[in-house]
Image (cartoon, rainbow, N blue to C red; front, side, top):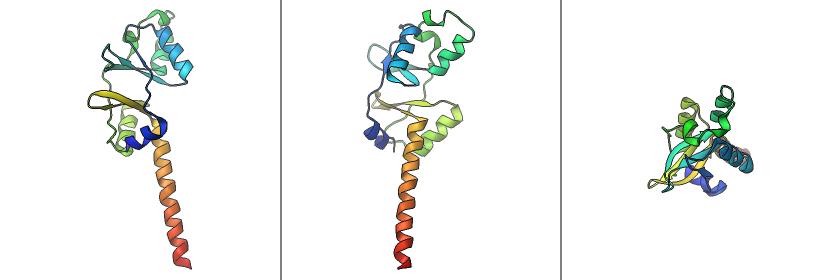
Amino acid sequence: KVRRILATKGMRVITIGPEKQIRDAVKLLARHNIGALVVVDDDERPVGILSERDVIRETAVNEQVFDLQVADLMTRDVITGTPQDDTYSLARTMTEHRFRHLPILEDGRLTGIVSIGDILKAERDQYRGEIDTLETQIMATDD
């Protein structure tokens, strides 16, 4: 479940307002070494998401990209998850829709964000645990 990922990585989410300039967003992305920012309104509710890719795509066609507002580039129709979601379904959703970051909401409140890397690591760890258990069982029956 996503809840386990958030318990491990923490629930801190770096956010930005839609009225901020892209240059501010890029500074936050670089400072925190992250790939996306959740865009929130004055009540801290998600209204969009801005990824590194969004900025790079615009930079390719607009040399004044850094003077734009976050609202100009952000994705507005954000798909979100909940702490109760299973990692497999979120991985499938992220792969099908071709995005790498998914905000997590609980009772309409932003409580975290997971990346495809977070999900793959959690699944790998789960599979490793299952393999270790099976190897232990096999070794016990060989004795």
